[in-house]
Image (tube, rainbow, N blue to C red; front, side):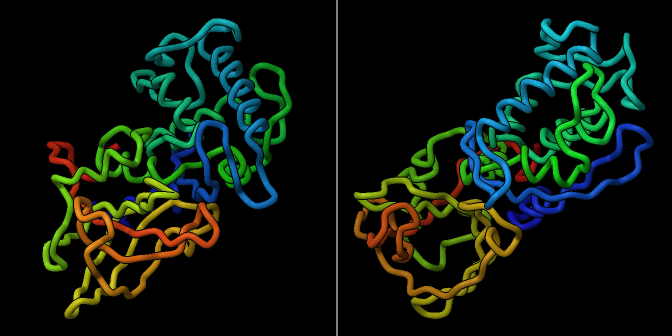
Length: 278
């Protein structure tokens, strides 16, 4: 799976309905993690944290009848069926937390949304725990309560830790030192002394011409639709100011006004996990 194909799994989510299996479509536009959330005028960190707690209690009520007793760490709906969810399908409490705190894979977010529908957190009637629903539609719920950040996209794409510090991707031993060595799937780490390890993205396409390159990048550095997360641009590729981090190009910092950062390029860690596996 390419970075863009994986990015599309977030921006164009396909959710099988827990009631009849029909395909429901929605997309993510929020940015943030750990309850720190931005999405224009919609959503807020405290609101997401509150919704997770209400969702969790409804899930517990549906699973075993007691909103105060945890389901986890792994659970099924074999004893008390929920909608048309298969009785042998397993769910993980930690995965559902990751979906709400900006670290979920597409599959984990899909599971959270299916369960939110099934227990009544989405709709017009009270949920199984007697609480008013949070949003009327799946898209509204996904927009306001599901999000991710740059580490999440890159970590889940590589099948690694989605909460790993950005510096993990910037190992000097994996630095690219030649424009001809860069490959699709490489990580791009934005760095400078005043904004160290500011951001990380993924290379989808790399077309060098002399010392310049036309590059397509997948990243999740702010809220918005696909136009914010998938871009094509041209750059002059040079050795970076920190020689141990290899080559890349200069760019204005998103975190520190008036500061210029450098986007370094690194090969991914060796792994037996296929890219895009959730």
